Length: 120
Ligand SMILES: [Zn+2]
Image (cartoon, rainbow, N blue to C red; front, side, top):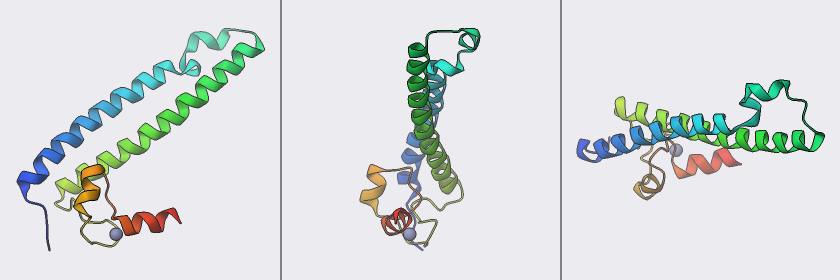
């Protein structure tokens, strides 16, 4: 079975751990910016349009947080794959993931073929 040499995996692992920290921080920032997370506003009987604005802000914050969450899960998965020595091997079909794909998305754990299958 073909695997990446440690000297290639190591910097990827470092990069992914940095990404993980960044994403955790980003998630905290989004949570802080979410008007619904601000407990002081819970007792605030603001005008209806202000509520609408908060609703939009909340929806946006939630969408952003979901996006960060998904990426974070993916980064953690990739780090686990490194730990068990299965980085760059598709978790679905067991084939090597294209290196070009890994360059763009180092956190990916599935090959392009399986990714396309999933989208269908
Ligand atoms: Zn695959």
